[in-house]
Image 1 (spheres, rainbow, N blue to C red):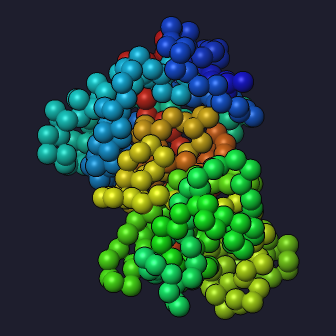
Image 2 (image 1 turned 120 degrees about the vertical axis):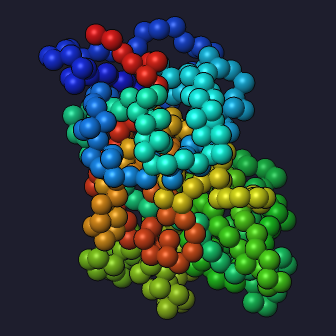
Length: 377
């Protein structure tokens, strides 16, 4: 069944009743029917009510929004709805908005105040709530992994980074693959030096590989073996190897590298195995098919939030500092499930890992949707 959506006009019409999903005609041939455990409520609010809206540098989000526009421009059917709700607009609505943005910012840049004014003039903000009326959820972080490797197997590079296998039916689990079950059946794109770094690459879904000849190659997610993901933190907690406050990615990575004798069996308890593809040009590339933008791209659950749209985020970073900024929904993640559930892209490298690996914050978000689809009482 489709997730239910309710538009609650509390801030527009005092005492208005709950409205069902908008009833205008849709292109039913292109609508999706995702499974969802709950519904989505959108409450119109004013920009003045957005926490921190006036303090962000919204112009820094313009490049990320331009990348969403690149993806919208390639979609052939302007009548297709984004997601399952008419209020989120059609492809044509967003293509028109992108055209307006290009006219307003022909160079792709502008001042924060000009960018802020553009969004205010063209989009309405909506607070997101789940079926239970709760407007808060969990926000984690992710990053583009970095590791060292080789183009061919060598004495120092022994860990394969696999491309998609020739046959994708009945794929084995991680333990079987790592002991040779897909030898000769799945191409090896590169060989890496460290198995822990490769496992983290699998968790993050994208990475930069510095090769022995000094060149750097990018890989991105291509598919998986269909097995359920099991997090390293839970595995190690169940084994009594971690204590409170020790389940962050930086700590787990260091522990596994210090204890290689136990690391292999721990990592193999996660049966999910990821296959990759080479990425040429900018990256990493998210599920929306565009390169992600550091601190401006967000992974979402597309059962509730369509890819490509702007979102106002209200949460804190791993150090408790305010993280209120304009983001773009441009990626997904296997663990990103829920009405208010996001994954914040921190960028590449060790500094990004240090932030992403520790982030697990409570927060809220607000969808910015076309004024042309504003519901009426």
